[in-house]
Length: 130
Image (cartoon, rainbow, N blue to C red; front, side, top):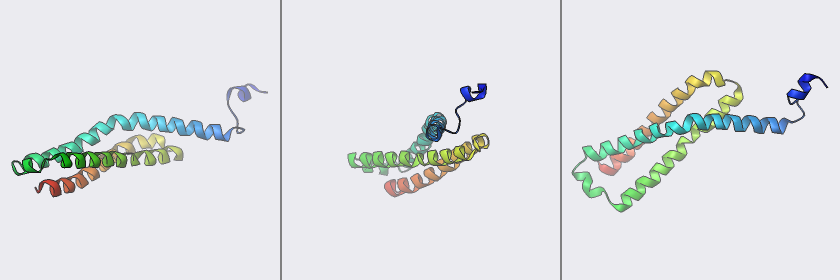
């Protein structure tokens, strides 16, 4: 056996290679996306609070326990939608374009947050009537 054969796994373990790459790419994605979830949630909260404030005092009557529960459910759904970024992230990393993807992640974050904020705007407009 040569020195290379002892230090690097060969093509005899494809499952371990795939699982290892997958877990590495997923960990990389988690480290990048999860801290930025605060930016995403902050932007959506800003939109909802903006509608609440601009519709004041009329929006005061609309704030009920049921509305708060509904907003909570929408917030959970928005965070589930945020997880769609992981699919794109894993796809690009597996394609071998991970170096170029460093800029692409920022673009995806900006476009995805803007899209979610637009949807949130229409929901909040319907709720608070602004």
